[in-house]
Length: 394
Image (cartoon, rainbow, N blue to C red):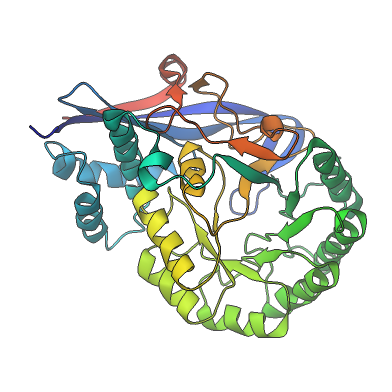
């Protein structure tokens, strides 16, 4: 007899980040000595009538609207066979068609975790294992004015520290260009300083996080990336990473490859962006793109076009996706800083699972969990002790 979902439990909780504050420009964090913030995330548990649960900590999905969408999906899911992921993915994509679908990712990942536990296999094995060690890059905080990543030299110093640790690649999130013209000059200076200091030994990337106000600014910094031989340049300017025409035009005017797609929602939009020659590398994220099911569809589209897919940010699900993908290069350890904690390391796992700066080995790789499902154990006592709100759907 097929298993059935009996309930879905969502628990929002928080964890502290010391010496960190909002950088004040529409979200994100910056090094700020003496201050702290509580970062909100949520855990989802899908229980079944066979005594096996699918579990996941959604470490990147904004809790407010992701949880609202899970509430919309719960009536459909309870009573369903948890193994019928493809059908559920199709139904829920349609059900959320008027929204951003950010609630679907955590649900789908938890269903994959259930499947791995049910079949007593890690998810990467169910997908088809290609590798079990993942080359990683250090992906920085945004720049600050507080004695941390506060100058081009400071970024280059941190890159040298990461190189010494074993990282083969380094990505900058800079200051942006919204305050004064000198900000763009500083972005250019940072790119050139990194190229001079570590460019012969590390792959370098730049992610302005859509901070630059104009196409002209994006073009100027892109030409600096050409000079410093950067591996890729992603989401440079204020149109939000959405314009096929804008990024195709930028591609025609610089040599540095573009990596686009983080802000596109849905497989058709990702496919159209590739087909219109608006990117060189393809972005995928199992939380943002409809779970492991959605992320692997994007990876296969990229493979069909002869391109590489790069998975966004950190978590066990991202490690399993990358482990089952040939056409990918680096695992993103995000977001790291020389003086404060990695924002995406959630201290709610037992067994030593880590997304901290020092999670790599001397060869610059991270392991893929090999126990059934996601292969990690959630510390539910930590979740309960730091809970903000718990909701059960039956």
